[in-house]
Length: 265
Image (cartoon, rainbow, N blue to C red; front, side, top):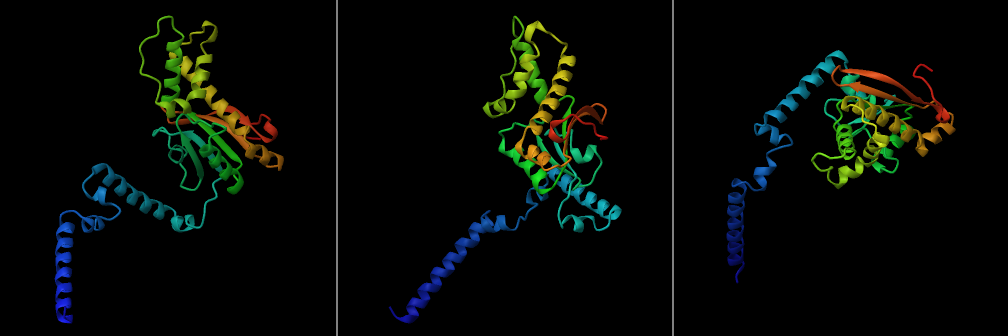
């Protein structure tokens, strides 16, 4: 084959490839995806996502007006004085209910504000807060109308009746394992034939849960080590009342060496 024939063949192949690529891209291929951008789903008309983005823009502008330079300062690092261990419930956002700006609270939120001593996720957050952020105030915050607490309580109450009513099954294995300790605590509430009212029982289990998790935090090696080093680290238990919008100090406080303490001392 002569050089001119070879070049002509090569050009033909190239033109065919270009045509095929163009047809594929205009029918929804890579080109169609590439031009969508990071906010493509919101830009497509989803009112919920569009609303969140719009709210964020308005919020950022308001914060910058009230606190000039806030975001540029935030970029230099975080120094939160408090670790918050709370529930994942959407009604209990820690920065909102305490009326503080980003950077004031280091959060760990999960279902029913649990602190399993062997859970690497929760323990890693606590370790980072204590060892790297030098946080000496840890709040375990429960809340009223907690779905995790209610689920465990209702199943425990039903189990203790002579003729158990049909209830939805316990959560799938992962959630069942996560709530296992709380469920066991709920079962103990009905030992000896005790039958509190549901309102009383839920309140009692909610408070007991907070107290238990405060104790779990106090038992972690990273916390004990901080106390051994002489740090004035305190762990307190609070309750958020969803129906009032108010935080309540439960009088649960563990300080250095595991001694009881108060917020003011």
